[in-house]
Length: 504
Ligand SMILES: Nc1nc2c(ncn2[C@@H]2O[C@H](COP(=O)(O)OP(=O)(O)OP(=O)(O)O)[C@@H](O)[C@H]2O)c(=O)[nH]1
Ligand SMILES: [Mg+2]
Image (cartoon, rainbow, N blue to C red; front, side, top):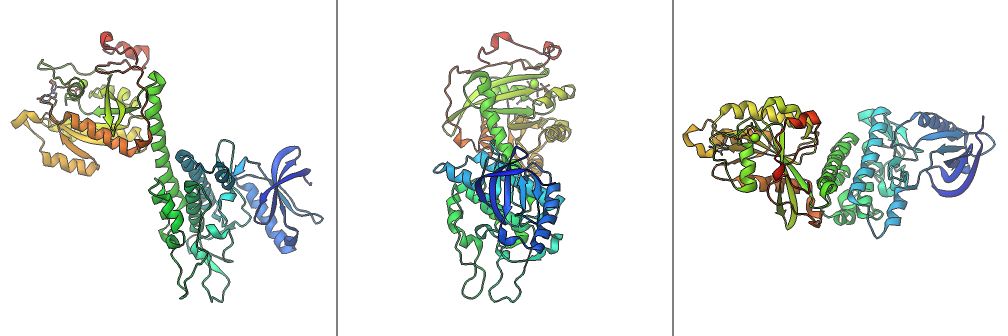
């Protein structure tokens, strides 16, 4: 049965014809009407096969084909969901502003996810990825559109097809046939989409359409490297955080390009950094509307000196008593610090090293920005078993690696030492972290470990764009917080109300 549709305004050009805003059975849709010159039985047959396949595609980052109309009497039409605008339009309308970094990450990640679906679940190459074929919803969710030139490909050996099928500005070098070749075909694989994705990413980063030298081969018939043809775009990216990703996508040699899954992995890391950065600012602002907060958690076996380290850092003191009470559950301390001229609040969660509190400790790990893995240099077990145990705890609860420093405490204890500096440095190298020796008793290196960890977090999260926040209610000195735990749990905790900061 033929669908009842009505074309309204033209909104763009697709690979085979014009795209209109339309209604289909009274629902808003986009309708692509095939160009009359293409109505030839072979093309229409191919088109129909393609429509049947596309109708089966179902992914949030691929535009959904709703229906198609192929009759002998009129131009074939295909109907897809109607979205707000395409990426090219969005970039143009934003000028002179550029798309904010978090949005660039999320748009490119959406496209890469769409490509993972097409490449790995269907073995389909799009072949015409360009910013005009990336559609955006009102909330900037991106969807790959116009699969008019899409083809099945047969894995590694690639496929042979007509050269330069897509939009030249975005086309991978291998789709340009060598001058003087007799065969009009070129062989390529899914990496041509990755190349186009790299060009689209540069466009989104630079906030303008790509520039590219139209000359592909030099006078001796040698291919001109893409980083030369696209040097203006590359220069304009400067040291943008996604520069490395883009360069890996537009490699001349397709084998060296990332694949769609690797692009997704790369961008997911960026996304999680953005999310952590947002929490850094919001976490504290939600409560008190002042400084952005970095959350640090010292972890380690019981009696390694975590609480003493924190107290030395916060109040520059060390308990007189020969033994101090073990931490029950979790205590929270706040101290403000200055990093690169900006004020931050360090929130230090003092965890208990006792294994029976591991489940409480775990619930606070997820949004931590950094960890101190503390062992006692006079206690071998705290080094061998303790660090392994606490590192495993972090790995179980964090998807990506947070900043971590290994700390050997109690170095004042002289000949009682059971772990050498060399052994600790070896472990640190294996864990890929830095090592510091401290003494909460003498104060040795205590400020340094916190400052170094804070600097690591600052750099990892690229906090340079976090402005200084008005400090309405400065919370200097001791703050001892009860956490938002259930009544039953909180009853068990020590809580020094006199030290409790009213602003927290
Ligand atoms: N000699 C020496 N003793 C220390 C040092 N740091 C802590 N201690 C002692 O080690 C013991 C344990 O210290 P805490 O800070 O309570 O240890 P903790 O890691 O917080 O222990 P839990 O709360 O049970 O996890 C106390 O008796 C401290 O006096 C240090 O740098 N040198
Ligand atoms: Mg303690």
